[in-house]
Structure formats: structure tokens, C-alpha cells
Length: 337
Image 1 (cartoon, helix red, strand yellow):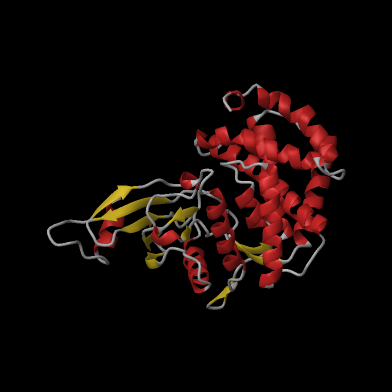
Image 2: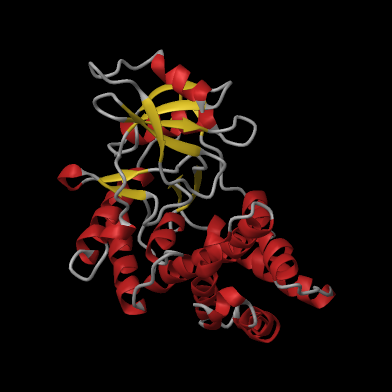
């Protein structure tokens, strides 16, 4: 990345006697590439985010909104939108996921939910630019990844008219539930791999460029029913109920019956996990990234458990057991779970 290093060299002075260099650091599921800029103090993160594939201007605007709300988001020190270059403050390498164990889990999730309340209270307008809505069209577009990439693409399931009708009825129900919730600032991928453990105990928030204004429970269920780590259902339910009370106290929502909030939470998670099944399949089939296949069994279990718990979604659960589990169980990634 000579061009990226040359750009950084115009912005940052090296420590005396040293030269600047770029060291690759772990990336994510996007097309972005991350590098630690060494040879300076403090170190910084240089990013190449192809401008034809990534939302770089949105990233800088959303970072400003989050930081203004007291959220520890990276500071955008410089950006060149035309070439897809960004220079960010360095949050280190320690993910919340790597710090989770029985001695830390309650404290870390409490901090993550504290941070989420700040995110939900953030402004949604920056210099005249409006955070886009989590529209019905976008919610449906996300769920359509499930039949296209997971069912047909990965599992080779041919969908008939009845199959498609069942899915469309489910998708409509989930969209209606999402749209009836209070609409707040939504990170849209809020989980333990996008939270960083910072010195002093703060949580750094990353990977927020796809933020929208949307359902209050979206980021909560992304965090508590994380696609990369699982917690006992009773613990998750207690966390969700605690957050609901705090959201009311913060003014993010009006009081609602516990059963209503639970349905919002569960069905929002069902929407997300249906989407994620499609995304993880697409990452392998289109982008050649097999690393997410091993996470599919957990996401499938979340999907089936929630769908089985409600009469309205029970037909989908029965269909999933009959049509999806048999071909999935023959896959290497399923057997290795």
C-alpha cells in the first residue's frame, strides 16, 4: 500500500530516528483493509476503504455524531474520500470478545449496554446530513439474502411457490414488528467483535458506517444474541429486561408490557439472524471468505429457537426443521460445530 503510506507521510511526523511503516491488522467482513501506522507516537490506524464499495463519507459523519454523544468512537484524523484513505486513532487490538469469561461477563455487558444507551441518544443529523432510516425496503432486502444465498446458494434448496409464500408472510410480520418499535440511532452491527477494550475500562465502538435510524431492540439483540458467542437464555432475558427499564428511564421509549418488549426483541433477532445466514453464506460463495461458515450453526439455533417460541412463527420453524436442517446437517461446517 505505497499510496496509502505516502498519504500518511504527508500528515504524520515519525519519531526521531525512525521511519513510518504500515503493519496489517485484523480486518472484518468488508472490503476495508486496516494497517497500524508504526514509527510515530502515538500509533494510528490507516485504512484503505475502496470508495466504490465502502461508505467513507458516512463513516466520518457517523463518527462525529457518536463522539458528540460521548461514545468512544475512533477519531477521524484525516480522510481522502476520493482515494478511500482514512487515518484514525488507534484503539489497540483487544476485542470485547477476547475479554469475556465468567468473571468479566456481567461487567462487560453492563458497560456495553451503557454505551448502547449513549448511542441511542445520539443525534441523527450531521451538518445537514440525515442518518438514513431502517426502511421497510431495507429490512426486506436484508432478509432476501436468506433464500438467495443461504437456501439456494449454499444448501441447494429449490424453493417452490408455497415456500416463497411462507417466507414472504414471515418477512412481512417481522418488518411490521420492527416498524412499530421506537426508532433510535442504530449501529447495525453492535456485538463483541465490534467493541474494543480500552485502557481505563472504556469500550471503543467500531464498524459503524452502516448506521441507520431504526428499531430500539436491533442493537440490543445483536449484542445479547451475538453470532460469535452464546449465553444462557435466562441471562439474556434478564439483560434484555434490565435494558428495557433503563431505556424507559433514559427517555428512549415509553413503558410497554414486558411481553411486548420481549416480542420486539425476539422478532428483531429473528430478522437479524435470517439476514446473517444469508450474509455468512454470501461471504463464502461470493467473496471466498470461509471463516464465517463455522458460525452458521449458532445462528441457525437462534433462528429456530425463537421461531419455535411463538404461534405466529411456528409454521416457519416447522418448515425450517423439515426443509433446512436435513441438507444443512450434511455440510462439513455443520458437522464440525
